[in-house]
Structure formats: structure tokens, C-alpha cells
Amino acid sequence: MTLFHLFIVAVIQGITEFLPVSSSGHLILLPKLTGMTDQGQVIDVAVHVGTLFAVVIYFWSDVRLAIGGVPRLLRGKVDTQGAWLAMCLILATIPVVLFGFVLKVTGLDDAMRSVTVIGWTMLIFGLVLYWADQKGTQEKVASQWSIKDAFIMGLWQAIALIPGTSRSGITITAGRYLGYAREDAAKLAMLMSIPTILAGGTLLAIEVAATAKTDLARDGAIAAVFAFIAAMLALTLMMRLLKSVSFTPYVIYRVILGIVLIWVGYTA
Image 1 (cartoon, rainbow, N blue to C red):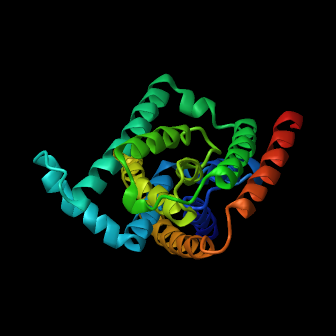
Image 2 (cartoon, rainbow, N blue to C red):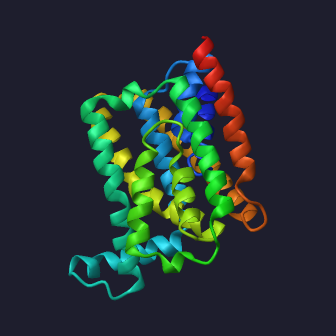
């Protein structure tokens, strides 16, 4: 792959992984709408690793807290903030892992990778995000995350396996619906992405490990660095904007893109 191609793929992944506009949808659209060759699974793994490092570093204090709580959780004790956070993150990840396994076994994951599907999910879940953001109160903060809310957000997160839905978008939608403030809903969504990206990236890595070549490994390393930088910038910008701006700009983008893709899908 050319450096330009790697850069485009990495930047798209890095920016859209955490903004509520769907990274998988944009990556699927890239070769379909531009004629570029599909980047392949090795590059997919690499850019996911890049975004994973970005969110871990950005929320390191919370990540360290959760990691520190794992030993106590393994001993059956949930008597610290870290153990509680770790337990909530695990519960929130279970639905997406199970649903992902079902899609993989049935082959539905490949069947849904169409422009039309992405168009409809962009449009529908963009409007759902707007509804939840306008309707939801801002009475809860991230430190009040409960087992019930974690599992509910996990169920919503599983829907994001449908291309175009947006993992961050649907979990933020769930958080706002449950009454979490915008910044806190986004923070919980980002923390939920860590075990999810780790699980998905590990699965992909196992699948491609036997076929990976030296030149692909080099391309993957370059793409990971680009994705890391783009993700850090996107995270920083979004979290700062949420202090004064709602999710409406992202909704407008999703609605416009969704309508365009639906038109393209049905007229092509």
C-alpha cells in the first residue's frame, strides 16, 4: 500500500472510531466509493491498535483504576472503585462479544457490508442520537455508573456491529437516554471501547497472524502511528467541545451522509 493510502485509512479510523459517526461504515465506504483497494485485515488490526493506545492514554487514570481493581474482582470482592469499574466494563462487553460471535458464525457480518445498510443505519441511529441527547437529563455522572446501566449500554453497544451504527455513537446514545451528562456519557462510551477494541483486534490478529508478511507488518506499524495521532486529536477535540456543544453537529453529518448513501445504494 502507498503511504497516502495508509494515511487515509488510518486517519478515517482514528477520527471516526470515537466520534459518533461510525468508523467501520467509513472504512467500508472508502473502497466502494473511491475505487481504492480494500486495505485488508492486517491494516484493520493495526489501526485498531493505534486507536486503542490513544483511548488508553487519554483516560489513563480511569484505566489504571480499573486494572488495579481486577485482582480484587477475581477474588470475588467488589469493595473498591476500581473493582466496581472493572466489573461494569466486563458486563458491558459481554453482549457485543456474544452478538459478534453469532454474526461471525452465521456470516451475517459480511452480508451487512453494503452502502444501503450503512446509509440507513447512519440516518436512523443519527436521529436516535438526537432524540436521546435532547430528551435525556444530565443528572448522572460517570462515577455513578451502575451494573444495570453498564449492561444496558452493553446491549446497545452490540447493535454497533451493524456497519454504520457507530460504536461510540450508540453507547453515547444509551448513556444520554439513561440520564448521563454529555461528557460523562462520552467518557463511559470511550472506556467501553477499550475491552471491545481489544477483543475484536485480538480476534482479527489471530486470523491474520499466519498470513502476515514483512511488508504488511511495516505498513501496519505506519498505519497504527497515524491512527494513534488522529484518534488523540479527535478525542481531545470532542471532549472539549462537549463542554459547550451538543451532539447535533454529528447528527446533521450523519443524516446528510445517510440520505446520500441511501440514494446511491438504490440508484447505482
